[in-house]
Length: 276
Image (cartoon, rainbow, N blue to C red; front, side, top):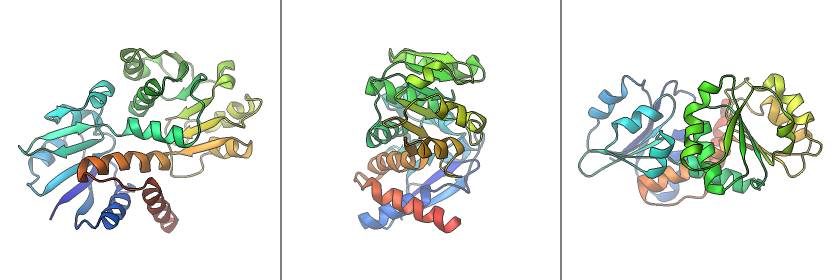
């Protein structure tokens, strides 16, 4: 029996089991995928206790950085971003680390028709923001202003942009005139963090038609900023889109096969509907 799993803390909310099991059914694989509550301190012991039947692991917060440290090898993108969301078992028992969040962001923005040639307005400066900045560098987007409550908190994310030679600079946690010029607005902020600025942010843009908001939150949905943005006629991509796109990459790494992103997205939407 081949086994895979998603690890993190908290993990009960994760839709990864639903998504990966749907892919296994499509591929005709008799594989098992489970969810496990694992903290940073517990991850080394958890990995050491896994038998040869284990093939791959999906990693969510707070494990993405420590997983990179525990891996035998790391892809260039994982090393650059400083975070891994995927571990794949090696023949020698070690683990190869990769980051499918970055190509997942690229795919999400492309699917939404985002105009990345214009400046980008990014909210939040954590690990997800680092992946977004790497994706924007790959897409050769316009300059990025990164809204954070403290510029020190964005240091690691901005270092990723600097390492890739992509223009990005910190900005205060406030709506600025530059926000109105952005072709893409990305929120990597935790649920609720941008709520009080939602109306001001959307109201600062003369015409949201053709403008894309990418909000990495997917539950609860829609977020206040997503609801206001859509009501104003703008295009919205959600964290659910990212979840499905990054899972395509994970499944390719773990199984060697491709599955349609719409299959994974539909499975996640059905699960969320059942929960509601």
